[in-house]
Structure formats: C-alpha cells, structure tokens
Length: 433
Image: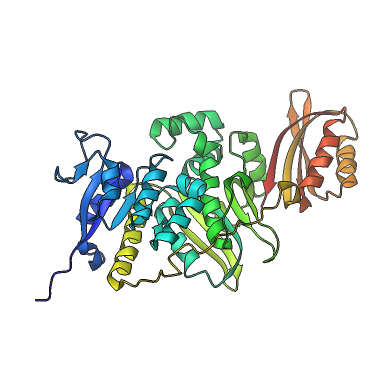
C-alpha cells in the first residue's frame, strides 16, 4: 500500500442552497472524478448553528466564526458561497492574503471588487476560481480562459438571467403583462421578493462585466456597462415583435469590432430574429454565444441556477485547484490566474451601431408616416419597415424598424419627432439584434 494522500482541507463560507448542494455533491463521490475523494470538508461557516440542514455534518465542522476559517492555517481552499458584498469581500481578501485559494459563486463581489481581489491573489500567488459566478452550471469561464483564449473574440452575447428570461417567455407564450407574470414568478420562487437586481438588469450587468473581462483581456468598470431592464417591455411589443419575426430577450452583450476599437458592453431588452440561436432559449435556462476568429460561433447552454447546477461549477473549480495543489509548482499557471491589469476602453452608447424598433402613438391625420420618414432621413436613419398596426382609442399606432444606425443619430431624430404635433407619445423603444 502506498502512503495515503493527506486530504485537501476545505473551508466553506455559507450553507444556503449552493453550499448545501456542494456538500451533497462532495459527500456522494461515487462515479465522479476520483480526486474528489481527497477532499475533506474541514470547516463550514454558518449564521446559526441550530438551523435544520439538508446535509449531515458533525458539530465540530460547523462554526459561526467565519473569520476563524479564513485565518485557519490548516485550510487549503476557501469556498465562498454566502453571497452579498460584505463580509464576503473582506473574507475573500483575508483568505487570499493568507495564501489560500478561493472558489466563489459571487458575481456581484467579483464585478465590483475584481481588481482588488485579483491583485491580492496574484500577489499571494494563489488562484480565484469563479466558474459558478456566471451561468450557473454552464462551463463558460474556464473555456474563455483556456480553450477559446487563442481566438480573437469579437462578441459575447448572453441570456444570463433566468428570472427575466422566465418572465419574458411567459409573457410571450401567454400574452400576459409584466406585472402579472412577475407576481406569479415571485409566488413560484422564480423571482425574489425584491426583484430589482434581476428585472432591472443589474445581475446580468455583473455577469457580462465578468465575461467581457475574460473575453477581451481587460478589466471592466461596472459603471461603464449600460443597463436597462425589462419593466418597460409590454405584451403589445412582444406581439408586434412576433409578427415582425422576432422574440424579445434580455441580452447582455460585449462586442468589439476590431482589436483596436473600444468595447461596447450593455444589457437591454432586444428583438432577436426567430432564427437566431438565442431566440429559442426559454424559461430559466441560460445561454452564452461566443463569436470569434477563427472559431466562428460557439454556444454554451444549460441551467443558469439551482443547487445542483451551481454545485457542479463550484466543485469543478475545487477539482482544478486540487490538481494544482498536487502538482505543487511555485509558479502560477497563467491559464488559471487572472492576467490583466488594464481597464478596457468602453464606447459611449451614442456611438453604438444597432437597429431599432420604435412604437409611436399618433393623431390620425394624413401624412404622419411621411413626416416620420423625413425626420429620420434628416439624421441618416434608414428605415427597414414602417407599419400602421391599428388604433388605440383615437390614436393610430405606428411601428418602425430601422436598418443599422448610430444610436446618437437615432436619438436626435427622435427628439425632433417628439416635437411633431401629430405625435402623441413614443411608448416603446427597443434595440434589434
């Protein structure tokens, strides 16, 4: 018999859905990668000791003193699955400073404090692994860092928030309005009691900031990510989109036209052509489409949340770290470490080139469509289709889809159109993929 390998000791911060899922996976290692059997769940930090748990852990493993875990010299890897900004940030930094590797599912902390966290990790010669931070169980972080890293990436487009995708899917299939579906989603547990982070696009912004930093090799300032949620999307727009051959999705997009041009990074509801691969991603599923040269298009699809999916991502990161600890080299593996210090230049939205969908309510008088056309023409906005769709009370409804246009020019045309006496209002304005 060879000497038994000394176990790799894990300190887990948090035993909620993801923490519990991770412990369950680790305790049931039959048929999984053999390295998992070398893991010892050494300490688990919780808020309260007497809460009923979905997993069996001995009393000496559980503690409410989270500081003690990140300071314990015996702990090799700290797994942060508590969420929130603080104390998560401080505990991650302390663990790294103490020379421990960190696995985290915390997209909010990484998107806001990534610069500080990765700098600390690089100084200490340890790794921060964050596969679970974007797309639940879908492997997308590691492929961007490794398998796809030889490509010149030009676009990363994702449906990365399950709550909003679920709401939009139901609005589409049932013809319901946003508020009704949201209330139902909250009742069913697909949306939080406070749905702000999801429905206003903030969660998706955190995730696209992380994906963009990996895809384009630079840090992203979260304040530069244009963010628009789905509260404004009406069942009327979903119905018109369908007639025009589109579905409406909340997309998170990071795009760079040439290696030297600034990045466009944004989150907003978007009309997606029905034949596009992202058009058919429904319900709480997530998908990330990566386009680059020479690969072409690659799509990652799967469950974006849930105990099992997220535990899979967390545990795969732990597995990577065990392999690192076993090979035990002093020099960091450049494909696992974070290698970029510079911030990406982000283009202002006014410079974005995109297509638009706009819906106008107009007084029913002759020549309105002509006037719209003239105003658009004055600013070089070329129109793909313009349809008078019907009436809302006394008002005629007109829907316009443009060709590719500079957003700043389109906004100037709209400002002029708003002043036309015939225009009552512009109830919706959406970008088109």
